[in-house]
Image (spheres, rainbow, N blue to C red):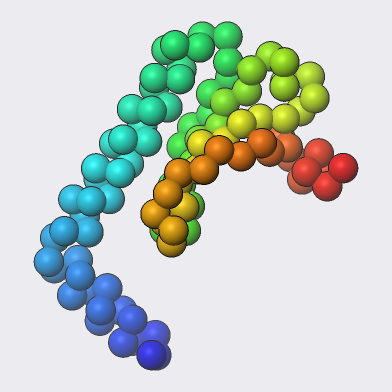
Length: 98
């Protein structure tokens, strides 16, 4: 397929309306999950939500025990596989490469 064909399909799907409802529901669920962590674990640092490019959506939280190691835990929704994953990640590229 060429780009303009993908765009026409995208437009068709948006006109249907189901994608918007599903996406709003998914983002609401992830937002509520983030708020749950923020309220339940006051001592954790909880990031904002990265919505991505329909590849992945995530937020991270950092317990004190990982903070001094510059690590964090990410709750990630992978759109292609349609599942949640939990990742241990470095807080920046240098930490990730070490």
